[in-house]
Amino acid sequence: MIDSKSGSTVGTVAIPAPKAGVAGPVASDVKLSADGKFAYVAAGTAMAVIDVSEPKTPKVLSNVAASGVRRVSVDGDLAVFVGDQGLTVLDGRTGAVLKRLS
Image (tube, rainbow, N blue to C red):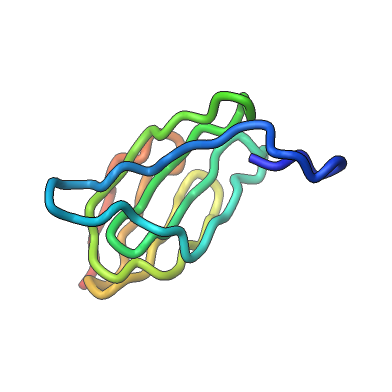
């Protein structure tokens, strides 16, 4: 987390590998919820929902294993991820998988 005014780092979070034997994910796309409380991260091998309401102590709420996740789009309380397996829709507040479309 970077303070937009000063540019200084105020908090960090690591997205753990979603399963054993898989390299830790690297973010390719990040979107924020309209209220700024949640970050949605497309990270190659994972889709993550992170609570950023306390910037100094962000928390990973959900870390879902996936393949080739490159993009995320947000609409209200839904986060839609695009990857090699097609589209995956997550609940933007809990990170629960709502639907997978391949």
